[in-house]
Image (cartoon, rainbow, N blue to C red):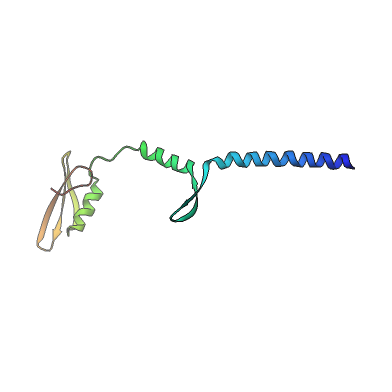
Length: 114
């Protein structure tokens, strides 16, 4: 009876060591941080993927026509539409309270008005 009990305890100890070592390997990507917002769990692997995507994504260097339309509408242009897109400018036409109007945006990041 003692022999069966000893072998069962040894088997149980071996099984728990395998389970514990597996949980330590998976927990290496997690950190417990204490900050002004309280205690939180931080996943290192998730931020590395986020940094990887941001680093290798090509930067937008030109004015997006949708952004130019939004800026024109914010400036008071109604029924705005894109008339021309050139390497240097984006032209948007529409109507204001006074009648037809046209706004020209630079074709650079941020779409500044010319």
